[in-house]
Image (cartoon, rainbow, N blue to C red; front, side, top):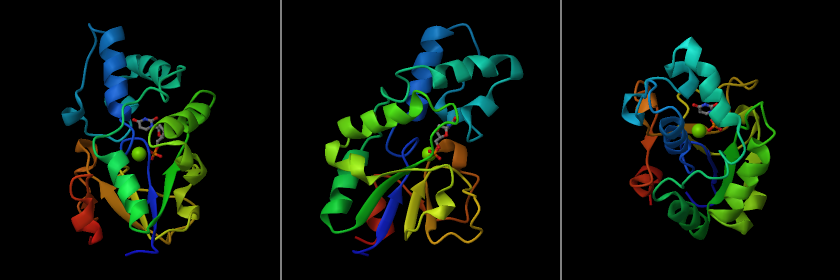
Length: 183
Ligand code: UMP
Ligand code: MG
């Protein structure tokens, strides 16, 4: 497995996008519909909420500090460092919001802070992950599509409640990654 290139997604894999959203949603709209993570059935949080609440969801995702302040997902930082230590080529491969103004800068700030400044050079920011070459892509999105119909990587799905309908892919967490990758 060493010498392999591992592309690791950011939101929902190393950065707790949903935790940050739910915290802000509950604080700001305590009277409104609330779906805890375990009840999320769709990948995009906005798609879970009715039409009249979608702008309020977006307001939170687009505001300054949202992408900066996410907590790390438990075990993610340690896994990145360990993967690099065993000689894997590790990149953080993440898609920015099209409403990019806060998101892009804050993703860099997040990586600089957690997992650390040397990881900033490992960031690949792209809307189309099929263009990026690698052996594995660890990602929570159920299906990853783009211009390349046959990407070079194997998509190993990072286990989250909203992707459990996908059962034709290997599944990984920061608890079992060594077994799944064969360490
Ligand atoms: N994203 C949303 N809503 C969600 C989850 C993700 O807008 O519920 C956006 C945030 C990021 C991008 O810009 O998608 C993350 O995509 P990945 O790189 O993690 O697939
Ligand atoms: Mg993701």
